[in-house]
Length: 126
Image (cartoon, rainbow, N blue to C red; front, side, top):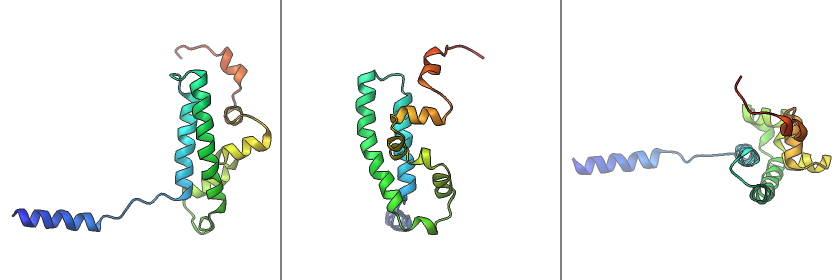
């Protein structure tokens, strides 16, 4: 009995395929982490700036990988379509550098917000 259970577990282990995340999926994950850092109220300004700088360096590497990925034109997945439909938000670091804005300001601008509107916003119930 024990031997058959062990063999079944080994068989399932070998049949399971490894997880595959393409360049676009990795880029989206890194970008989501950077946006979460931007919006984290628990960070001080210095901690946020330090974390954003490190995240931006990682994110620009992922953005370049996506731009150089030759397999993307053949993939018609929703993630790839959305990535190139919203290229200013997908390639956040490169687009903000082209416009001469901070990453946070570029992202807020695309969301229809500004630093001034956030400073005047009040917290409350709807």
